[in-house]
Length: 246
Image 1 (cartoon, one colour):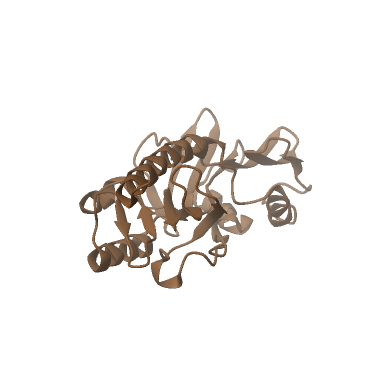
Image 2 (spheres, helix red, strand yellow):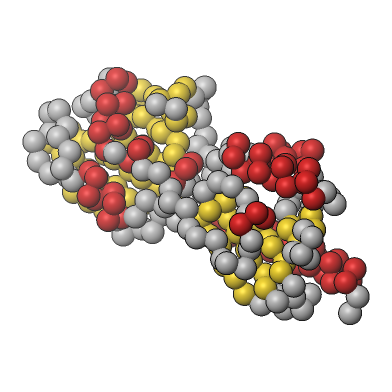
């Protein structure tokens, strides 16, 4: 089979994998584990609540701690970020995170977006309704400070061709579509580091409209045009790339 045909097949396979990855994003779990959630929250001291929290962590994509005192309650909930929060007004920045405070129906609620760990933190109470106090509780959880950990790149991807940023997943297997030696699928948290590294590679090796070829024959496939990188590589999104290795 000609190399040009292999290239076309590789790119088509990459587009298929990208679509599949987007469909699977909804199934992605929070990068904060139930054990981390319980460890962070169980020792908290909440003003007006003397007891320890009751935990519900049965759901894979939602963990909740309930502080109870008589008829008063304070809930700390962490959910998987299947999509960005829907803000009722304009969010503001809380320690660099998008957040929103709402007082409604006798409840004070603070929502904090944590895209770096694929999570959304919500704190609500019928007793503590003050915005500043809820913000302090959000900080006290320690959940806002958890940073994602980058996994290791497969050795088959040379260091000079590796994109920068937090690598969440990197799976390697044979390429059944184009008959190449390996296909490496990489999921990376988007940010300035990732975009700058991709643009640098494109400037050095040339962008061919959704993919580039390196001198040793490796092909890097991505889901958009370099000139429109801000549209498909949005801040804190998880972006998928595919390396085809001969």
